[in-house]
Image (tube, rainbow, N blue to C red; front, side, top):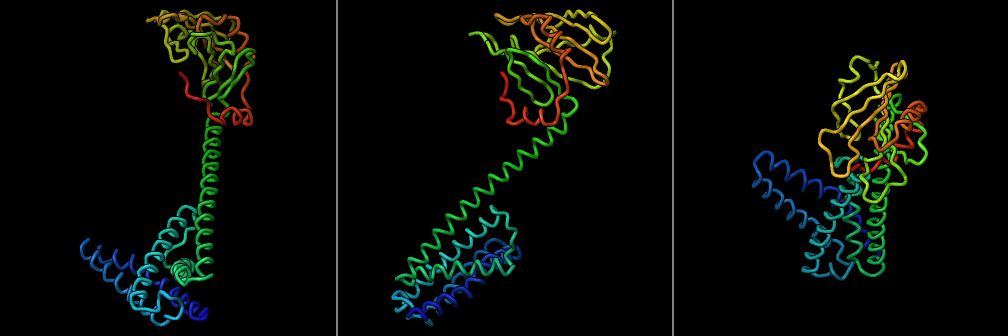
Length: 319
């Protein structure tokens, strides 16, 4: 009996190598040439032809199992093998995409794998230890494919994160600065360093004592010092005043035109020329002016390693 099972599986394997591609390509070609209805009719005819072919295989190897020993059993066997084989083919297509194998339907490895799915279904229907072995193989393939798919998805996520981090680092390297701020927690989005006080008070708005540090290309012009808009923590001030404390160091201040309840309504910043760049450090008037001046004088450009460390993981969205 084992010999008949082997013959049945071999014949089913050979038939399965052509059944799934013929059903897919035949129906698709007919639909493209003659419309959806013709494609559906051709697909049904190919399916019926596939059932007839599998029925003939079952008849030629009817000693392989009790199911194929009768005409009704052979017909049921043919439909079950077809359904199971097509299901494994669909699973193979899905895994091909998820694992990034890049196999085409007309390649021998793909055809052989498609036929193996039909042979596996024949083994499961053969009974005895063939059924147990076939089910064990099926479960292993499904579990293994799912595991490998998850591993690859995680690897792709890591690669995408690394690429995004590399792109962001390359974009801001040279413009990203930081400074020493005892009592503050540092976050960096590449463009701006955010210093948030560690002793945040109950009910205090997050931006109230937050300090921002950024750099821009060019030279800061004194004649436009009091005309440029002053923006700190996404909030703007008017009635600006500008003081040149020394060459290359400016102090700017102003008040918010529309006060929020309980807000520190004054905004201030220091601007310092740093070679071909100028630095800005700003906060509300809840932060001592001296703190800003000393912090900007300690500012230094971040190295690539520093910037990568601060950008991964990305800072949480701000209020």
